[in-house]
Length: 97
Image (cartoon, one colour):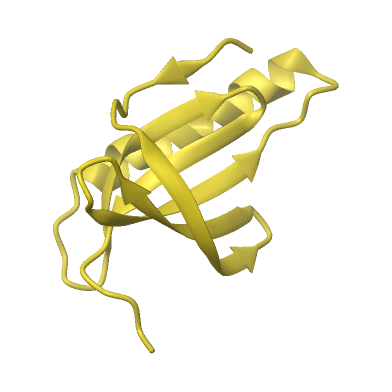
């Protein structure tokens, strides 16, 4: 799959925050100095059609979550496809100790 982005900021990956069945979440810093969380999901490479469908599903989910505004839901900023890795960016206010 080609690289596709709806998130245009450069960022640097930091420490692993958590890991689940659908990917890993890392603390990250934008080039602006803002701290965000990035969920990375590795796409299936052996079946390009399946990978495209997975990626489209992630983008659609992030599109819906970007519209939500609730204290218990982080604000999603967008997605970025880099090779076989999908990065979904989330704004965060702070990390729990």
